[in-house]
Image (cartoon, rainbow, N blue to C red; front, side, top):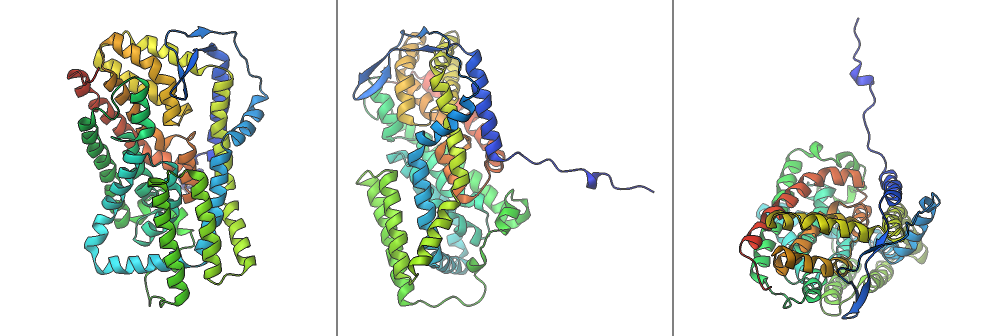
Length: 472
C-alpha cells in the first residue's frame, strides 16, 4: 500500500517581512565591521551640503556593538517619524471615510458604468498610469501616491483584477515617471544644478526615455491584469484579496439610491481630491499638509455622513492601528541607514566604487555608474540627498573618463527604476502597508520587471555615450 508523501510535506513559506528587514539590519551591521570607515569633506553649495571630490580619507575604524541591533530601529523610528505619523493619520482618516460608505458607493457606480461600456475599462489602466507617470516626471510625485492606494485597490478588485493591479496603477505609474523624468526638480533639476549643467538640458532624450519607461511599465501591468482577470487564481494575492471585506463593492443586484447625504459626502470627497492635486501642484504641499487635509476630510465627511462622534473615533483608531506593522518595518528599514551612517562606511563604498569605474570602457563605465547608484539608492532614497552625495564625485570622474556630465546625471536618474522593490524605502513599504500586501509577495512579483527595467537602463545608456550627449 502506498501513500502520498508529497501532500504531507510542509510547503515553504517566506519569512515575515519584518523578519527579512531585521535580517538585513544584522547583515549591514556585520558589513560595517568589515568595511573601513572613511569620509569625504563637505561644503555648502546652494544651501546644500555637497561632497568635495578628492578629499576622501580613511578614519579610525568605528565598530558598532551588538546593542545597535536594538538601538538602530529606535533611531530609525525617530528618523522616519514624519512618514510614520503620516501613515497613522492617513490610515485613521481614510478608515473614517470608508465607514461613511461613500467609497464603496462610488466604486459600485463606476464599475456599473464600466460594465455597460467595456471599451472604457480597457483604457482605464493606461490612462491612469500615464497621469501618475506625468506627475512623477514633472513634479516628482512619490509619497503623494500613498492616499491613492486606498482608492485604486478596491477599484481594481471590483473590476475583476487584484490588489497588485490596484497598487501598480498609482505606484508604478508615478515610479516610472520619477525615474524617466524630464522635469523632476528633485532628481534632474538638483543633479544638473550641482554639476553645472543648464537646468533641464537634454530634454529631448529624456522625453523619449519617459515614453519608453512608462510604456514598458504600462504593458507589464496590463498583461498581468488581463491574465489575472481571466484566471484570478493565478494572482499571488488571490487568497489575501478573497479575505478582504469587499462584499459591498459587488455590482450584482440593485444599486443603492442617491441621497442628500451621499451627494454631500461625495462632493466633499471630490473637493478634497481637487484640493490635494492643487496643493501638490501649486502650493507645493508635502506630507504634513496632505496628512492634515485627509484628517480634515475624515472628520468633516464623518459628521456630514451622520456618524456619531464615538463611531468616528473608533474608526480612526482602527485605521491607525492597521499601520502599526508597516511602521515597524519602516523603522527597521531606516535602521539600515542609521548603521551605515554611524559606522561611516557609505563614503568608503562610494570611493572604492569610483576607483573601479575609472578602469572600464566608457559604455561599461556608464552602466557601472548606474549600478553603483542603485547600490547607494538602497541606503539613500531621497533623490536630493543622493545627488548631493554622489554628483560632486561622479562629475569629475566622468570628465576623466571622457563621459559627458549629462550622461552621468542620466545614469544617476535611472537608478530610481529599482525603488519599488526596496524594503528600505519608506514609500514602498508605506504603499504596501496601505494595500496590506506583504513585501515578499510584492518583491517576487516585481522582481522580473526590475530586471527588465535594469536591462532597459543599460541599453538606454549606450546612445548617450556613443553620441557624447552634451552639454559638457
